[in-house]
Image 1 (cartoon, rainbow, N blue to C red):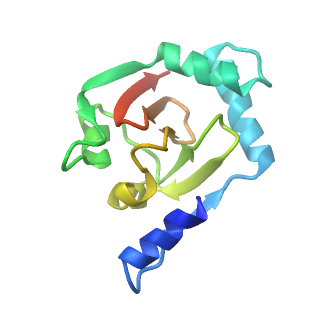
Image 2: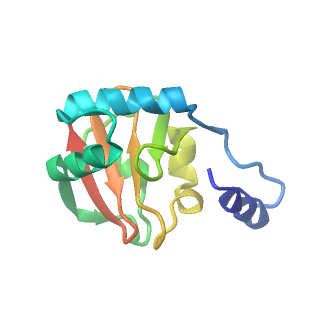
Amino acid sequence: MERFKIDHFKKNNPGKEFPWHRTLASSDMEEVCRRLADILQVPSGNNLDIVNALYSCSQVLEENNAETEGFSLSELTESINISPTENVYINWYRFDNIDEIRFVDLCKYFEDIWYPGPDDIDIFDSTLSWILSITHDGVIRLAQF
């Protein structure tokens, strides 16, 4: 998680600690990429191929946008019949910077974690049976495997 997001959270929420999260170790990120490469049937070792294949097999959720007033990640996952595990992962770029966080915390503090404009993120859990991609302008895509 970028330090400025944690600092911004603390400034806007005096007395509250930023929710628990951890950045995955390189070996854990490599394992995620290996599993995704297998699922997407692309050569492992090239994360850009994974990103492109993920985009190609995902569908835009036309009725949803993360920039919409009152957007709720938990309501979205419920409406598309996805039941995330307790912890989920946030990919910040090309699966080379991934954070783990509790799903309930990501939902509760989504506006403090995803910033419209600079952030394109992918959210998934350890099952890798689904990936929600949220672009910098709030467009939401879903890939299910």
